[in-house]
Amino acid sequence: MIASLTGTLTSKSPTEITVDVHGVGYAVLIPLSTFQTLGPVASTVSLFTHLHVREDAMQLFGFATTEERELFRLLISVTGIGPKIAQAMLSGMSAEELRQHIAAGRTTPLTAIPNVGRKTAERIVLELREKVAKATGEHPFAGEPVATSTAVRSETLSALTSLGYGRPAAEKAIRAALHDAGTNALTVEELIKLALRHVTDR
Image (tube, rainbow, N blue to C red; front, side):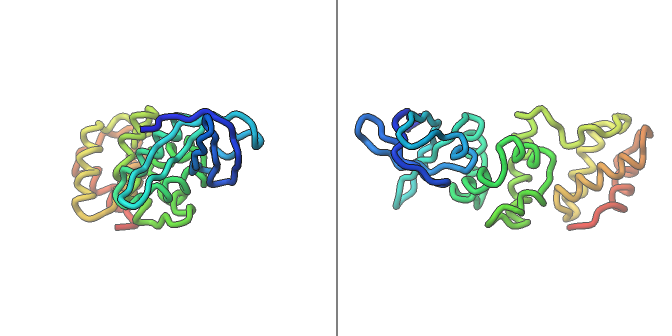
């Protein structure tokens, strides 16, 4: 696998560049965030890369930082997310912004990116939220009163999703319920009843 490239930048566009490495020209697909870090044509460029292999083609993607590359790899691990959509997502916002939206379960900003609909955004949050939250040190219920235990919150979340509510909507409802409860400790049953008053989307 090609893990990185260092060479001379011979051509560039917002989505693709060519890097000459000892006489061999590599076509590298890049997100806009990487394009913005590039110097002029004929300058030296160093990229972290990911080689995407399909039955009919091999595509080399390049990134300015290892963080961008790791997030790209996480995105393409999601069902239905190909490298082109992952490239577009990293072009639509910074890697840090993308991580924060996913960790917080915010799907609306993701749907502003072309070819990312509501269901796709929800799937990204569902499959990556815990992984991204661990990396960023965030928790889905960070900042809420601590009187109600994590176990109660998790059990309530499981109950709401079992009832058919989407995870982002369920978590939003739980946060609202915890806000209503303030410092009062709640049982699972009490938290479910309060959360159901705030659920607006299945």
